Length: 388
Image (tube, rainbow, N blue to C red; front, top):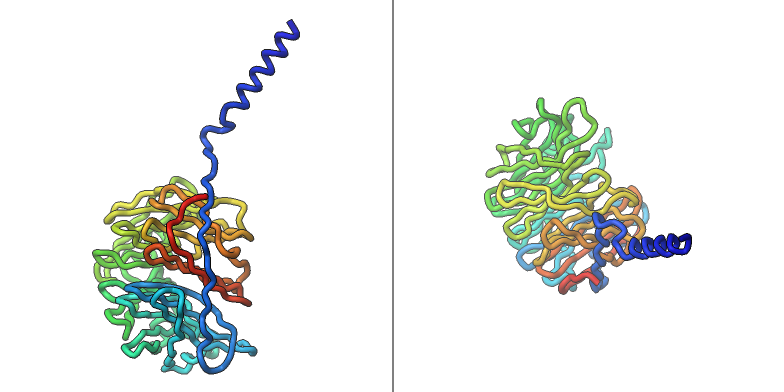
């Protein structure tokens, strides 16, 4: 009898070993391994210095990278590059027009009709406040500063000036003020008007808004971010839509429980795809028109900053996200925003306060830039992205 019990027990163990250990948790997807190639940016003429990179964008057959040159004493001057194919790059001539313009670091880049616009700044003045300027590419290809009165981007209500986007209706800069979320709009980049303390952007009984990114849509503009309800410590994801950039409509999105926000948004064909923090990992939301839905999760605990999204770009076949991912980097790709596969990056996403990471895509080409505060790199990958 004891021998029979032993045989039966062995059979049970063998059968258990043949079953999946946890049917509710499928095996993780195989990583995508793009053929990354390093790209060299020429050093602009003038004072020598280290290339510091901050953002990359592309449209209408042109690619742009922006940042600065940093000399041995820590001084900075604005720098930008352009390329027709993301392989061969040309330094653009920067034309400053203000006191702080010659020292600007270009932090955000947008593209419209093959032309670049950028946001730059430099800390200065008695109180050490950021002195923000915008820059626009003119007909001869140079990048010209557009000085602004201090209160347009600064002043007592200033919080931050974020990303810039181009579209059929002109340009949109996203950011935040002491009154709540804010936008700056311009039809041609020659003059930006501040839109703040208006209904739906301003803090109200529903909570305090925070805007992280913006993009042009077929019907106007879209901002993404979060709302912090009164008396709570956890935010909810939110979007804002506008036909003209001046009147906005807010919508709070489903978060499936827990803390969530939206940090980056892109247009992928007829859809808008946004990604951001959700609980201990990252989540994606998608919309066709004004109907948003939560579509997927990726990433998770165990990274250095599991809720940080550095960049999001739309390829011809899906979207690619770059997130804080520890020493091995944090690339992800999804064809539909729901199912995500890890992407092997050419180098780990850098850690530290001075780091900067950005990504842009056109067709099947993806440009990734990374700056750890000491060394900057640019990488290009093309072709179909398949796991394995």
